[in-house]
Length: 321
Image 1 (cartoon, helix red, strand yellow):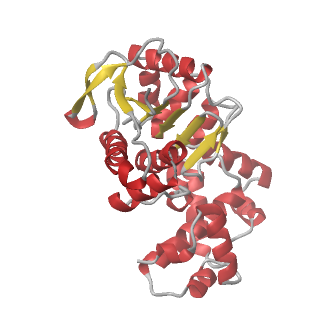
Image 2: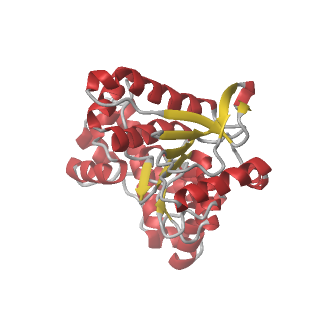
Image 3: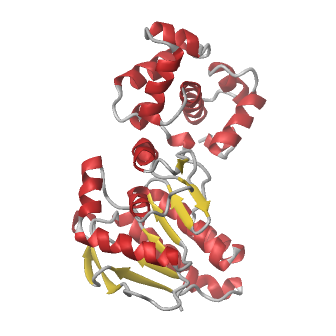
């Protein structure tokens, strides 16, 4: 019996596959020291044999069992190197992806757990596994996933989302956070903490500190201009009503445009600009947390700390060089 089945598709992101294998291999090697049984895992593909990853890299895999009996392993799909909606569409329409999607659906239907990061989350959606669930994905793909999966609550602020048997993670390097989460679930905290310390990795709770509103909007000119307007006005961030007047539209129309482009409300977009600026000041200046809070328009450091903890899952001190 296996604990993990790593399902690799052609074109998978090199580092996403590699970090999955490295974390599981490290867990195997350190299990005795942690006093637990080592995790058992297998590296599979739809057809078996060599699988071509990004940039010409390849690795050997075994064939994914068509109808495995009693498979209680967690199926993990590392992130795919897909950069545009067109590439995502072509991938989902490919024969290999179709077979992987069907296999994921069967595994989940039989009670198995499935997990994916980055653009591989689109495979879970195609398998019908995100309906009625909360999920995350690479933050710049959140609006696209929200359109493709109207029955799913897309929470792009989170690094890892676990909802029943479905676990999703953000951008490609969030595969690290995903594997630590799954390892902790499957093998316990003692082994996971040991692996984390030995490999010098730390599970992060949120993508929010990394989100750039302009990129999230995929080039939307209105969002780019609004974000620039807000940042230039700090510490006095303009009210939503003022922004609506400046952009010659009602608050409701502005909100509709912003939500369509980013999946966020206008106020949430303003807040993300303030938090991004706060993080930049914390990382690049010698300003105190109190001074940073004032520079981005918060009344005191307590307000900034509380908001960063809520949205980003970390205190301001974490972003100090």
